[in-house]
Picture: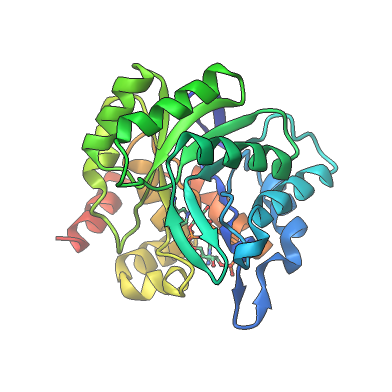
Length: 292
Ligand SMILES: NC(=O)c1ccc[n+]([C@@H]2O[C@H](COP(=O)([O-])OP(=O)(O)OC[C@H]3O[C@@H](n4cnc5c(N)ncnc54)[C@H](OP(=O)(O)O)[C@@H]3O)[C@@H](O)[C@H]2O)c1
C-alpha cells in the first residue's frame, strides 16, 4: 500500500480506526471478530492503527480497545514491527457512565501508564490529547505531553478536536516539527474542519480525519446514497462509494491519513484499497461541485 509520513513514522495511507471493535451495536459485539479484522487490515497493508483509552463497552472497561489491538498484534503471524499504534487520553469515564475531561498533569500521566499497560508496550508510538479541557490553558496541557516525550514514555505527540488557534499553541509549545498530527472529524457530511486540514498541510503536520465515512451510526453505509456523486464515480470505476470518499480525502493533501473504522474484515479490506485509487481532476471537481 502507498505510504504517508506521520512525524517520525512512515505509515500506510489508510489507517484502521479500531473504535468499532469495542462497541455493542444491535446486540452485536464489535469485538467478536476483532483479531480477524485487525489481521485482515495488516494483510491488506495497513500499518497504522488508531485507538483510545475510552474506547470500551462500559466505563469500568477502560482500555478495552487498546487491549484488543495489543492482543490482535500479538497473535498475528506476520511481522508487526513496522506497525504504528496511536492512542489518546484526556477524556474521563466514571461510574454510571459520567463523562468528562481532565488535562491535569496527574491525570494525563496516570492515563499514559494505563495505556502502556493495556497496549503492553514500553513506549507509546503516538499519544494524542483526545479533547481540550476548557478549564485549563491549552499550552499548559501540551507541556505535559512534551515532558512525557522527553521522558521517553511516548515517541510522538498529537492533538485531537483542535481548532487552528489551538494547533498554533501546540506548535509553539512543542516547537516546529514537534506536533506530529491533528485528528479531527472530517467526512462528506462534516467538512467544517477544512481550515484545520489546510493549516496542517502548510505546517507539515499529518491530518487524521476521524469518522472519515460519516461515523458508526449508519451514515458510513449510506454515504453513496446521501451523496450520489460517490456512488456514481464508484459505479464508473467498479469500486465502492466508501473507497471514493477515502480517495477524495487522500487527494486533499499528502498529509491526510484517514482512519476508517471497522468491526468486520470486509470493511477495512475494502477501505484499504482506496490508498491506490487515484481520482482524476474531473472526478475531484465533480465531488467538490456537489458540496457547493
Ligand atoms: N478523535 C476523536 O474524537 C474520534 C471520535 C470518533 C472516532 N475516532 C476515530 O476515528 C475512527 C473512525 O471513525 P468511526 O469508526 O467513528 O467512523 P467511520 O470510519 O466513518 O465509519 C465506521 C463504520 O464504517 C463502516 N465501514 C468502514 N469501511 C467501510 C467500507 N469500505 N464499506 C462499507 N462500510 C464501511 C464500518 O462498518 P463495520 O463496523 O460493519 O465494519 C464502521 O461501522 C474510529 O474508529 C476512531 O479510531 C476518533
